[in-house]
Image 1: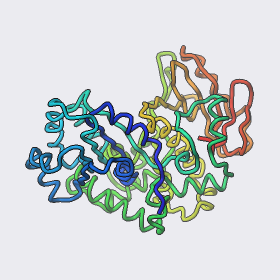
Image 2: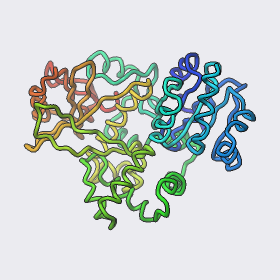
Image 3: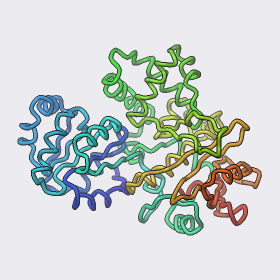
Length: 407
């Protein structure tokens, strides 16, 4: 088994010199504690609240817990003992040295709320997602994805090229380090265990008396719609629950980072846009497993081949921002006249429209909707088609053709 170096490592070491407390949140099994253990100094204590005895002590007597496990300390799965946050705040206010507390957890919304309430201004909050394409198949320093020639030319030199078959193999393999590193080789058993653990722990904690079999069917129904505009009623009808129940369950999936949303881009001059978000999964391997695609080849030719490619690209772009601790302002566009833009990146007051296509022969007809943004009163920058073409090219001076493997 080989450790996969994570792009966030240098950022954490840099922030450790400035903050007494660092919180790394993200989905289960994306390597949060493994990453921190790989870069920590030998004197740091490591405690996991998956240990029920440690969890009980942290919940019932947080002062004693911190006395027994003095700083510098790494506390894993800290969401199980929110009582610790007030005592960590006291320690920080009393002059705890920088780097005293490293915290991890897999319920990002809950953790961020706790941290912002108890440790506002005292904690650096980072979000780790699955292994990125660059971390697995590239070299060099990570930077935020940009729609410009300089970025793509630089990325080309630091990425491993691949063809359409290779891209779908990457999509099917997913982004969970335990699989990618070779620690586990039976993919079906791993994902099955992953889901059972997630539902029995995270979901059961959020929803009392949840029917675990039905919730698994619900996740599968959602996975069939990854990369699409959210239709809550359709998902609810698939498994026989009410729309309100489906909304609540989707909220749980989002809070635990299984899914994330792109919200539609709109302003006062674009009044006919749809209001529903698009839904994506953090890990395309999980989507492929849930939708029962047993090989990359079957996935490549299956009904969701285009949607899962879009999911993959959007998730990869998002990771390039998360891994440097930056917020990612990304949207999509769709209006009632059926004009659509798969992705809009908003950066430095400029909109960058992007189409994501399962093609190796992109053409100008694919960017016809880009013109709608000229009505938005916000400057529009260079656009792009991200696709399966093997080389970097352009449609014209305003639109780049970006190979998917360069993200």
